[in-house]
Image (tube, rainbow, N blue to C red):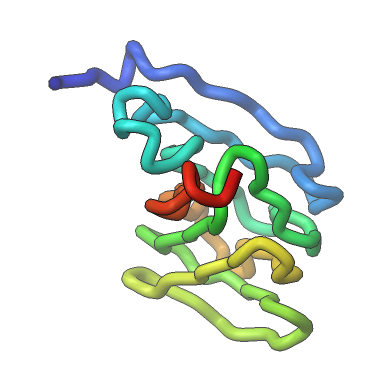
Amino acid sequence: MVKYLKDMPSKHYEHNCGGDLYVDACRFLEADEALHAGSFFGRVTMVPGSSVGYHEQKCNPDGDLEVYYIIEGTYLATLNGEESTLGPGDVLVCYNGDWNGLKNIGDTTGTVLAMIFCSPDREKKA
């Protein structure tokens, strides 16, 4: 499969999860294209000062965890009340029930891969 950026759906989220400003997301894979290994596979761009607000991770019924992989930029990540500064190559993993947030604290627009994955034994859990 080859997909071109111009054909990928994009969405603008104002105050995502109660966060500051906005984030833009471009979905690069649909659930069926990923063999239902997850429900969201996207490239997220965040301008300086924008954030995904601090929220409880609730992927169910569409997934079991969310992963943020930092491509570019500097972010303040909060996971269950603990703050960390993340940059390119760093990863934030949020399991269902975790409290998390992500804020671009740099002075340039940043890019993050955001993916919601499903447990391989999801069928057995139902």
